[in-house]
View 1: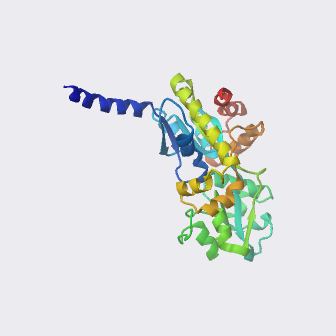
View 2: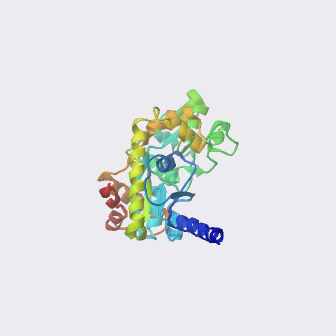
View 3: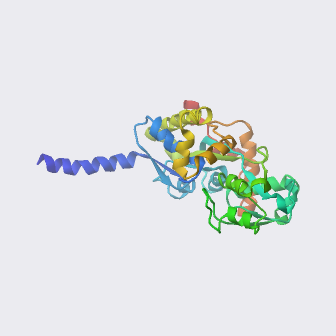
Length: 316
């Protein structure tokens, strides 16, 4: 009788544990995501387990009952916030100064030389915002260049349909996306590579998001705070002891990038945590551009101020 009872109770315990876990929707393939599993493994002390699931901030909009947190670049956060005003940006995991790589053999010596050229990027993403911001900063309008897509290559050898292969073949003049694709592009062109980067014009703000419902749930909020606290400890390691603590090797194994490539691009990644007063202006300007692209109304500055929620940081 006892064994039958235990056999009945055990699945209920597992179901309860699963239902109370913090569910985080996040891309599982990019460098920016890696502090999350590291934090869970090494520092998280919450009462509930943390489960990482492939996805992003869109899951908070489409399935808020099953997701408590999400991680994504600010572009996707703003796109979702336009229609889901209960979403909150609560923490910045990483800020990355993207780069454009181009082939000097085509006569490129400065950013303005890209006018009228074919540039690889991904529409609707942070990379497209980056290309727009960079080129308009030197007077190149959106209709003054062509964009095309392609697959991302994380590790050589790269397939023929990747941006890197297109650049090397000469069918693409330049491309600008997240790392390590640009680093591999620069390595692939060798001495013929030229890169363009300007953090003041654009940097990816890869953030952690939640919802007002999750944040207002006392039990969930406690574990959310603990997860952010674990991320804080992780970012300290990522920023200050990456080599000593084996972070390059860890990230390499997590996302399938050569360790030397990870180390080579590490300085482009700023493991931030909190943010300064300039972020509101940054998201206001980006939302204006996204509203135009998405054919929607601009989100008022006062509403975007609500989007940036420091309340969890205040509890640390």
